[in-house]
Length: 316
Ligand code: HEC
Ligand code: HEC
Image (tube, rainbow, N blue to C red; front, top):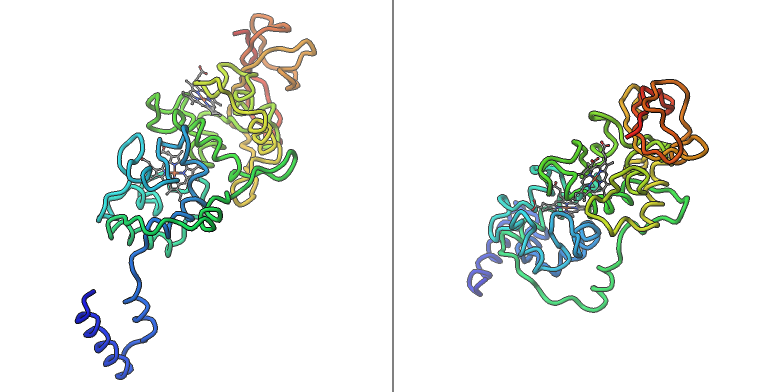
């Protein structure tokens, strides 16, 4: 702002204030507010986004842990257009104009004031700002939602980053393989626990959940399909805990049991007659006499109490 401009503004504020027309303090702060810089926003991205958007398997190929990554965009192209917040995919995702809304773990979403700061930063042309002090870098690097210890409460907030970085690249509507394989979308809580076609998560019962069976390799092909590497033992344990505790959403509410939904499980018959530990209820058709060591496919209906009503069991 030029000296003269500033002087005129001061005069104007003084006039309006003396006339009782305007709240001086509020206007003075607004006039003084410079657009935010990347340095001002970095800790926000760090706390809400980088758990999924960083490293070699960053969600959507989009790294949000550096300004360079933000400018580069993801596998689908740019996410910020300097000077044009309204046409920036980043803003559309934060507001839910483009879906799935970000952060994928929400709600809670990023609050309106912070989205406003990001919009003003983009409108101002994405200024970098001063490099962060070592203390600010350390503060920004403190990650949210540390992984809970075995048996500790686990929610969608803990599981989502694993699915986002290892699974959603295929299991989303326009993934690496086109439509989601088997129609199973893993880019939101609702989709992950849905009974669309069939259920893959039975709250309370990881052994009856195809999601858990696939990451352990009980059901084949093992997931992630592009593995190895498979999920770490710690990640698999967390997914098991999450399902056993009721497949809770990020706010801690357990998923409903979708009584009446269809279910399809794959696995190997154990010598004890279980399917990798899943006790098979009697009933249903048994095709081709599956015995110990045989790979089988089980089709069943889920009962409202979480038990299975077997339709048929057949050797694959
Ligand atoms: C729990 C993991 C997770 C978190 C946290 C997360 N994202 Fe995402 N993000 C994803 C996934 C997965 C996709 C791809 C979803 C799709 O479009 O199918 C994605 C896609 C995006 C896209 C679209 C990329 C493109 O090229 O279309 C933007 C922009 C984005 N995220 C921004 C953010 C921002 C900003 C935050 C933080 C406020 C955030 N994300 C937090 C997982 C996450
Ligand atoms: C490279 C792409 C790719 C990745 C990454 C991937 N999947 Fe898959 N997924 C597939 C394909 C292909 C199938 C179908 C395979 C089959 O059953 O023949 C599949 C099937 C599944 C099924 C069975 C769905 C059903 O209806 O029975 C589940 C569950 C699953 N994946 C979970 C996951 C999880 C969890 C991850 C991440 C840990 C993951 N997938 C990562 C490609 C992928």
